[in-house]
Length: 485
Image (cartoon, rainbow, N blue to C red; front, top):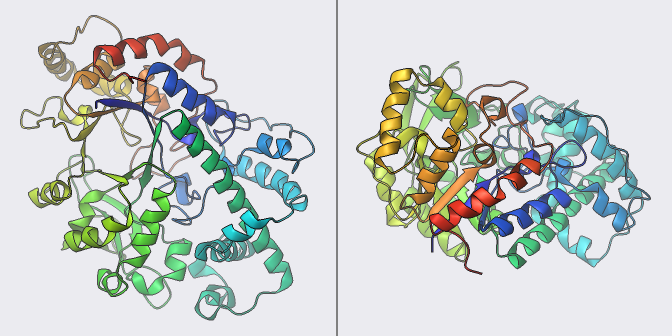
């Protein structure tokens, strides 16, 4: 059955407190998807956002970002006496530190009014919950520094786990309370999406952040030096996108150690993510075949080597634990044939981003594939088109016309949306910015850059999407992707 969906990070929704959250904006977005005939909401990782505000450098693979907790729901539940007065924030960009500081301050009041119940007691029995509370509490105690730079008694607490003083334990309990709220609210959203027959598609990074609970509590499973710093870091080699490659800085897994544990960390990671979503897109899927390992002392990604990973054994071990959760392989970029063989062996759908493949005469769209105008790492269609030379635009116009698109009708974003909706892949995903024909100013991320713009794009209302509803319904009907019930 042909399906379509929208890519929209939670933080980009028009929330009432400076960013999208699990409140009315999320429910309204699900209603919108249903009303136009969409079937999929694709999101970015929901984990605690770390270095550079990137959801792909999370502080934990298991915990949730507290900025997403909806405050109005807490008023309805009696944990807050009244709705907080929102702080003034940028209407077009997320100000992470200000919003998080504001919400945590309000959430402390909710914590004082909270009475633990059986559901809470059951939740905090999860292995990671207490440890994450300790991790964040000690991180805050150490002025937010990475765990490798904490005072020795805090850095080494994870090894023997001595009893903590009461003032530390009380803050740990607060952090556990925040995680309880996060998951309780998210599961309400997931239940609502299921009721509306909308599938939720989550995203899981291949690597984890160095400054994370994941690495702190599993130091033997990463290639670290005696002080906890990585000996090798992740990235990709130079290509036509980046002359020096991309040096991400994530620590490299010790796959031999993972094998000894039966890949338990990855099983826990994937099964935990599967509890939140109906589909999981694995970012940087190619690293299950071969991964680029860079010496940590190298400032770029130029000096590295490809190392083989145990992809087949890994998925043979892990997939039986996922109970049918659909896996999507992010297989973009220059790949060796073995990556596609691994993908196809397990029947994972791959990806096609039309900006990359429109003029690639060797590329063939397949039914078992997700096709996009762009992802969180691409420029918008309008921004990308403006960056092309006149010669490139002319060649692309010819390619569009050859595939039946009227290049004189509508915006370029509309033309490319029609192109991919009409294409053969079973799944088609449109970013919100391309539905709205927005330019480069609305781009979510420029890979391998750190600035105050990446990951900050947000809508200040749903009006633009509502204005495009009729057009979307028409396109979905024309492409036979409209929901039948």
